Length: 393
Image 1: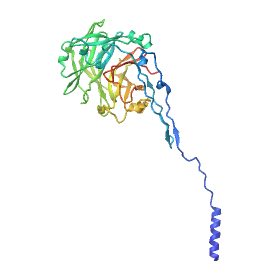
Image 2: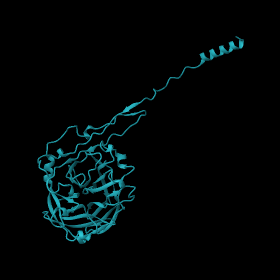
Image 3: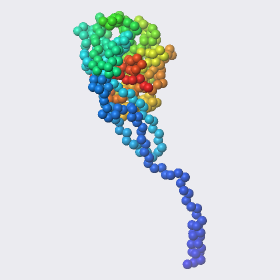
Image 4: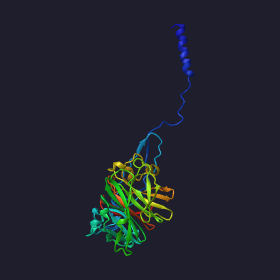
């Protein structure tokens, strides 16, 4: 071998000996980890649980347990906890109200008697004017506590409203009711090319032998969108004023929603701003001493005109175990009234445990039950349901 070749080999050996050792990693390599989504066991009833036959809890629809398989990930990810959901206790019903054709659309207290409004009262009387339904608070409390296991059977209260329906072309039924002493106010929906709402007033017999409406007090309420089958479906009394709330207030369909104000004689007086809230708003409780009230907020998957790409309330507060598995929404939302406008109260929605991930219970009526919780009722979907939901803790 030549002297040059020998020198090249020696140089390569020396370079290998002087090369620095590899630097060890400062942290272990990223590997696949597993996240388990937390589930509060109190949000769902245990499998096989039940209540004595005949009690409201015995009629609660079983809630499907959602699949919560561990989610593999290669990145450190923090998922929000599931929001709480609230159980829905169904009361057993009997009598004429216990049919899907009742279509309860609103309710409110007259003293200690709950008045429930069928959308078409004429279905429940021999007269053209029909009847509403009355249920004593004592009966509701006895059923709720288990003191009575008998089904609740509301009694009919004759509705006296001569000439009222004839004044409303395209009449499509009653939607809401509110009492101020014996004075009664109701809203009505009609289809006249476009949807139109009406406000009407009257009086209740102190002993509820009848409820009468004055057809001459009818006042129209113009719709806020061109969507079919929507009108002002919630009715509040605040001092000596009436406030009606429209059913669709989502950002895409109603960018600047308003609440309509009327005086005690049903004459229009003003408007107040109302917040954008997705999906349907179907009824509201009375306003408390702080100006707060709760409203029903629902969505079923077939109602594509009201579907929302983003739901701000779900993004802010999260979804419950059953709500996270479907697009169906059944919840109660709290609002705050002021002279400057109505706003969201900033409290988490009361999300109801869903009984069917593919079917919405169409809650259309709500009222507070003292300090215990809320009473709710549906229209014809999936049938007439009367229920109790406790206040959030």
